[in-house]
Length: 195
Ligand code: HEM
Image 1 (cartoon, rainbow, N blue to C red):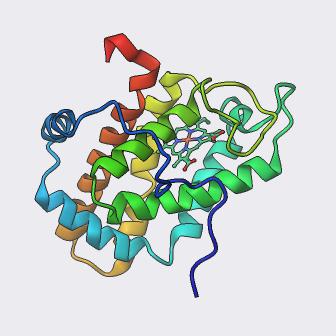
Image 2: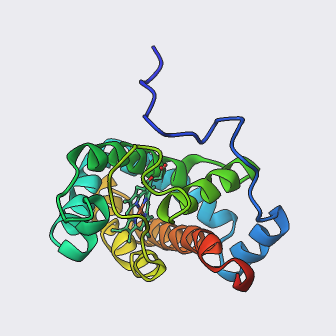
C-alpha cells in the first residue's frame, strides 16, 4: 500500500516550474559550502538514523517555534491567533523535507522544489498551499538565523543510532552544510538581482 499523500507536497509534480538556478550554479554553491560525496554518503546514513525519529524531531522544532511568539506569528492570523490546521499541514511537509534532505538526489527536480519551498516563505506563495489566513511573508533574516537551531537540535537525534563519534560528527557536518545550502537557495527570490 502506498503511503498517504502529504497535502500540498508537490516535489514530484511535473507541473512544477524549473528552478532559475542552474546545475552549474548548484555545483559552485556545493563547492562553496564544502559539500561533497562524503557528505552525500553521511546524509544517507543520517536518513536511516532519523527514520523513526521524525515526529520527535518535529516536536523539538515545533516546541521551539511555539515558545517564541515572534516566530509563531508566521503560523498565526494577522491578529496573532495560531492556526492549528496550518501548523499541522506544514508539519507533515516538514517531516518529508527531513527525509528528502537525507535521501533525495540534489538534481533538477530537487532544485525545482527548492524554489517552490523558497516561494512558500515569501509573499509570492505563502499561505496559498494551505489556504491559510496568515501573515503574508516570512522575513529573510529569520530564515538565515534558523540555520543554527535546525542544525544544532538535530545532533542528539543523529547520535541516537549507535554510531561512532566520528560518524555522528560526519552526519552533523553534512546536515549543517545541506541546511546552509538550502537556505542559500531559498534566499534567491528574496534577493533576485542581488543573488
Ligand atoms: C514551510 C523548512 C525557516 C515558517 C516550510 C517547509 C519546510 C520549511 C520544509 C515546508 C515546505 C513545503 O511546503 O513542502 C524551513 C527551514 C528553515 C525555515 C529548513 C530555516 C533553516 C522558517 C522560519 C519560519 C518558517 C524562520 C518562521 C517562523 C514556515 C511557514 C511555512 C514553512 C509558515 C508554511 C509556508 C506556506 O504557507 O506554504 N519551512 N523553514 N520557516 N515555514 Fe519554514
